[in-house]
Amino acid sequence: MINDNLISPFIMEEARLRVDAKPKIHRDEVTVVAHSFYDSATDLRVLFKLRGLFSYFRTTSLTPDKIINCSSYNTVYHSPYGNN
Image (cartoon, rainbow, N blue to C red; front, side, top):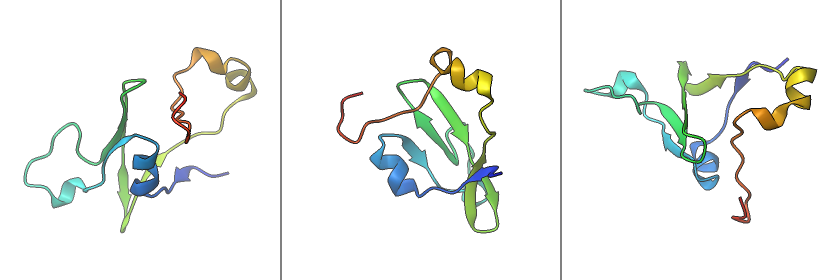
């Protein structure tokens, strides 16, 4: 089971997410946007954690109920063709 997601900030920015990849330990002042990504379509901000040199965020597997009722959850999805 995969519990962590490693993804390039470049790929996230290509998906039109706002990415702040600079870890908090390298900042003089920490703000709410520090070391996170933000999706303006869903107003979702996800904070990164740091393991060694890698930024990551925790996830869980979808349950069958969540898959069946996926339309009731905010979903971050950006079409590479700009049609979302």
